[in-house]
Structures are given as C-alpha cells and as structure tokens.
Length: 253
Ligand code: ADP
Image 1 (spheres, helix red, strand yellow):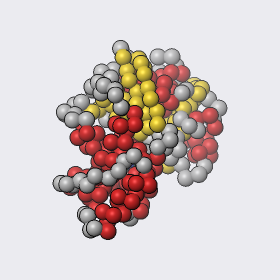
Image 2 (cartoon, rainbow, N blue to C red):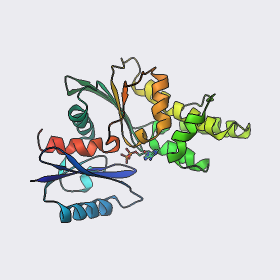
Image 3 (cartoon, helix red, strand yellow):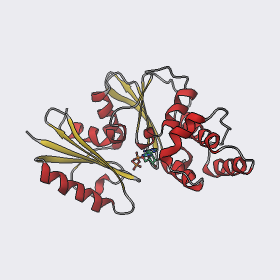
Image 4 (cartoon, rainbow, N blue to C red):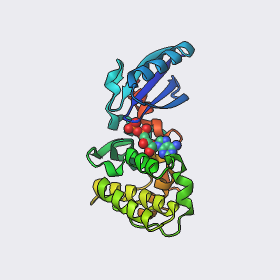
C-alpha cells in the first residue's frame, strides 16, 4: 500500500496529512509555525517517512514552495477536498491566518472564487491579536460567544476602527464575552461584505481553514447568513482541507 503526504504551509500553521491509496486520511497534524516553517515541515516529512511508505509529497499554501514536492494552488486544493469529502457543498468559506477565500462549487467542481489578501480585519491573525490584547486565548472565544446576549457592534471594515471600538467598549465596562461576540460578528460581517457582496449564498456552505475552530465565528456566520441547522458544514478536517486536496490533485483523483 502506498501512502501520500500532503503539506499546507500557511502564515500561522503547517497542516500535514497522510493518506493511503484508498484516499483514507490516516493522520493529521496542525503545528503553529513560530518562525521556522521549512524546519518544521522537514521534521514532519522525516517523521512520517519513518512510519509510512511515502510514495509522493504534495504541497500547497503561501509557503508551499519552500519544499520540493508536487505544488498545488490553494484554491484548487480547497475545492478538490470539499468536492471529495462533501460533494453536496455549493459554497466554501475559507479563513486562515492572513487571508480569506470564498469558493463556489458547481457539479462537484470549482466554478468561481474570490480572495481577500489585503484586509487584515477579517482574518485569524486579527482575532489572535485582539484575544491577546484582552488577555485571552483565541481558543476561549467559542465559549465566551455562547454567553453573549447583546453583542455590541464593532466595525469590521478595518483593524484600526475595530480596535478603537473595542477599546471604547472596554472603557465603558462592557463584559468581555459581549466584546468577543461583537468581534466574531465583525469578522464574519467583513467576510460577507468583502467577498460575498452581490453574490448568492448557495447552501450548504462549508467553513474551512483554522478559523473554523472558532465556534464564535461559526455562530456569527450562522446568524448573519440566517442559516438553519445543517446548512453550515464544518468538515472533520476543516484546517487541513488544503493539505488533503493537494494530495487528491497530485494522485489525480
Ligand atoms: P494559515 O493557513 O494562514 O497558517 P490557518 O488556516 O491555520 O492559517 O488559520 C490560523 C488561524 O486559525 C489562527 O490565526 C487562529 O485565529 C485560528 N485558530 C486555529 N486554531 C484555533 C482554535 N483551536 N480555536 C480558535 N481559533 C483557532
């Protein structure tokens, strides 16, 4: 049996998956980068090669070209993974550390996409920065969001406005969970207005990328888009869809 390793080097984290000939996903790794992407990726390669017979390595992501391997464009990789794992999906929301993408699918194929690489307010890094400014971990945002009753409106258009709105709310003594909920809603609103403007939100929608781990942002999308249960899918390997799709593309499946 052959095995394949897919690696997605992003701005914040490296995602790596091992697949076999039956397209089963045998393992997934999510490792925060902290400055040394090639070193971390190479140690993942060495470690998996010791345990599996790796026939080929595919790469994707903004840092994917740091490695030798079969390089796949990120949008192609995200679309390929969702087409295989959730063929019912019509729209993909992908939010990573420093960019976001809206991908439309038709008959199991990529039909259209738009990306946002300029506006930091709608990304994972912005959420991370605001969390640390508030003395929180972004991992806590989901539970805090769920406590919210009256989320304040925070400007989502630009990081500078968002930050000043948040400082103002903190000075007024607004509870932390309400500010967090306002922030998650601002990120989702930023995505909807920047990338989704004038477009139809065909359902079901898949939410992929590291930010899909943030239940606060998941709930914010459900609220803003008026989604019912089952209309927003979080794939099991939401963060690694790019890495998985790069393998599918490489083995031409
Ligand atoms: P990139 O591809 O640019 O490296 P990712 O798709 O890995 O980015 O997304 C990174 C972002 O995902 C982080 O900035 C963070 O906001 C978010 N994230 C990752 N893990 C979690 C988690 N457990 N809880 C909440 N947010 C998370």
